[in-house]
Length: 143
Ligand SMILES: [Cu+2]
Image (cartoon, rainbow, N blue to C red; front, side, top):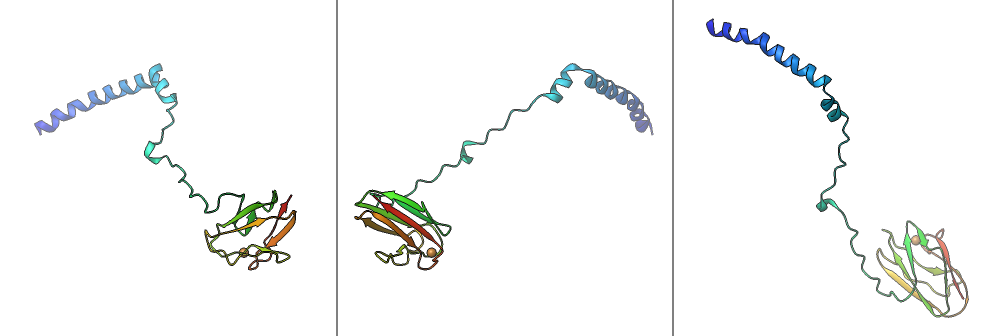
């Protein structure tokens, strides 16, 4: 009983101290500055920085490349000089072909990451398409 009574005597004092601190904090200019201070933007650790992995060089890198991706030839219109070897690389998960509309050349089915190359020796416009997906069309203009 005596112990409880002694504790009870401290409670009003503690409330008074806390109240005074609370009023002081709210009216203090320093406290206001802390509340409105702009936090610095966090900088990600270097370990999280991602670098693009180096791409392997194509097997035949002597000519311009046409990427086959998302059922498109990129670039769909390619202009080269006579004697240029063009390299197609299939980036899709399905096989495609590079087949001339006049059948002057055609690849086999090109698997994923596979390549096909053809050397254009005669000036002209060479339309081609995918024999598996004939809606895929493009052309090479040889000057
Ligand atoms: Cu195709």
